[in-house]
Image (cartoon, rainbow over all chains, first blue to last red; front, side):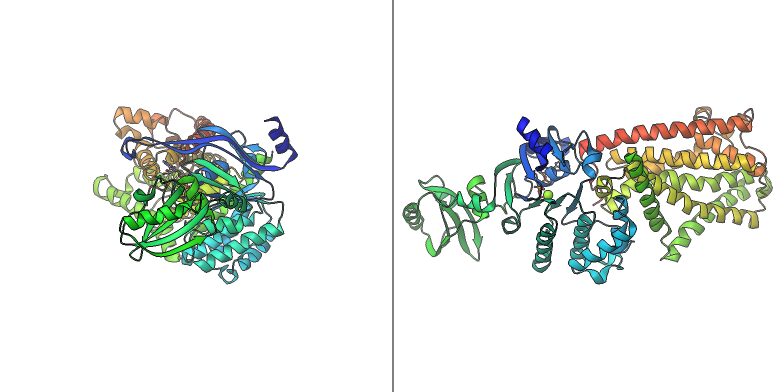
Length: 341
Length: 281
Ligand SMILES: Nc1ncnc2c1ncn2[C@@H]1O[C@H](COP(=O)(O)OP(=O)(O)OP(=O)(O)O)[C@@H](O)[C@H]1O
Ligand SMILES: [Mg+2]
């Protein structure tokens, strides 16, 4: 603790959480499977350094938004503590707010009656940015995301993708020291998502002392953008390291992708077999696609013979480089795209 | 000091945003409906009521009193309910409350700003309604005591803003019914504060309640300064300066209460995660 405090005082750490926990209490009729308490965050310990682009990767319901909301002073933790820019989010939220901003993907917020520029200008006013400077930044940022010609369009005339881009601009407009991006590319088409990712990357290159905490459930987004990634599931951090390191941990494992015909379920068949570390499956064009992580390549032989004995025909077999998706699969036993139960 | 500065940013931005939203000049038709036709229609209902049931119709000495009460009641609806409505609207309709809250600017100042804009827009309606009364309803106004009038007007408007923020705090917490809080309170005030008829017409318990509500005193002070005499027998023992003092006390109390209750409401909202709740969709 002493050393941590020291590092925070030295100013290396932008965001830190300590045993951060959040429980949501549900009303009786909202109870899920008889449970009236949802453990959204379970003793989360994280440290994000200044200048870092840190990713939080997890499936739906993992607790990503909950964590961001606590750090952005919108939600109180049930227990544990968190510091942003050196200030405690519960004890000194006013100080935290001076250094942060947040953008949430997949929502259509904004004052529809105002134009894009008016919306953004007003936000700059919230932050006390001089009007002239605000207009300069708005013009610059809008052209960076390809919306220069939309400055005087009313927000309710924007498509949802454009609204999202406007919101991204809103996040960067105030030049926050720490920016929270909650699934910034959610629901965007491939091209727009790419524009946003390029923009985020470029911004950090231009502002190397700024910090971004980004959540996503797109594996490649975390892989491509983030210097470090924490994998979160059911409120718990399962691993935290640079993407390459996470993948390297799997390197001694072998990842196979196989397509089989003639059976509908391989999981019951193969689960618990010697050498099988994890597997996930789904139907794809009438074939069963199986992602298989083996702790040794030799195990493949017995896997194939067991499949054969069950009446399956092998249609395709590929050996793969591990991706973050496989890291997730081996940690959680499920694919990232499946929801937290 | 820095917090004060941030509250000032919030106030300015809130006023600007409020004005943009309320006045919506780009749609003059809608604007006309809200700030002209609606208030005048409200007065016309009053006119018909008097023509139908009151002795002497508009010549009835109570009519100018009721007219004045109904006209200034426009401020109650616009400012008091308006502000409480703002937080719900920002949260549910625009999805912006969380971003507004997260900005370094003090939500309280922002809401005061929104209230300021609402006051300005309501003033347009009030002036139009007054002009309508002077021109067509034979209402005679004479500004007997400009100093008293100005003081009472400002104190009353400030009080409405403060109590509006107090209601905003409450609306924030009443998850599904936040929308109606302001309307229910405004409706109650119309009946209990002697807006359109003397308090003595109310059953005793309600009359007593009315005497505890600040708008009762506000309307009375405005009547005395604009019509030369008040409406309620219950208030006639009070001199003008006593009335003003009561109003000042209520305003000050409103400020203290709203600061306190809004703070508490904010804390509870953060604890329960209500700042970005969506109940409408
Ligand atoms: N206000 C709330 N009341 C009750 N439960 C909540 C509330 N907010 C979140 N939860 C629950 O907490 C858990 C974590 O939710 P959270 O929104 O943080 O997940 P997430 O990782 O952001 O998921 P997604 O990818 O879907 O956005 C979920 O089970 C969710 O249902
Ligand atoms: Mg989320």
